[in-house]
Image 1 (spheres, rainbow, N blue to C red):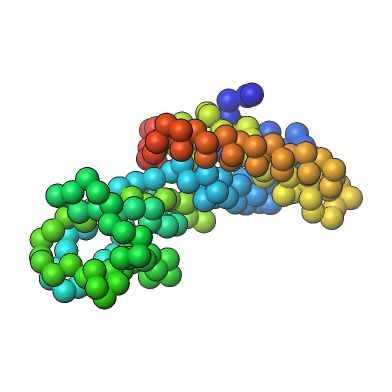
Image 2: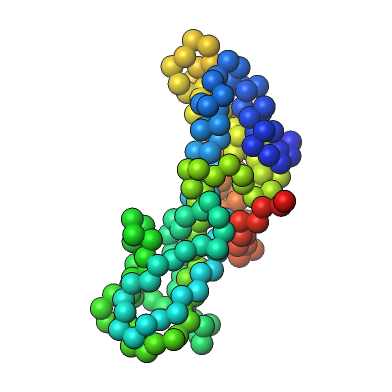
Length: 194
């Protein structure tokens, strides 16, 4: 597998399969493929800590990392405990970006630290992606972008059979990343090398 370490490398890779595709279509397809990869594999995570206020149910979750959004909350625990809170005690409202405790579980004490393990996804405006992710999975993520473009009805770059093959490669790497995360408990943050 070729190591692709930048969006430029990914663009060149996609253009090999879809010559003549407009630059903006290629860039947008790459962003969607990275986003799909992050959502489907759940390999990009961050622990976000909030401090409780007595009898307050909802807390805004703001990732430290720029250009990402919380996709879902996979676990919640108090800093004083190693045990996760039961899943039925809270929910994450994606539209509001808030972790909300259900009525029977609203913290009654102030100044407790709640740690939410969050699955992240890139925002649509993201222009850079983690180097570790591109080096490890970039080629197959780019295959997902190329599959999207080749699946379009175009005389110039449409190729439905190639789209199927490329999408299968993309899905294989999603499954590989998911299995790796589950096997190793891998949780990677959004670290951009300067």
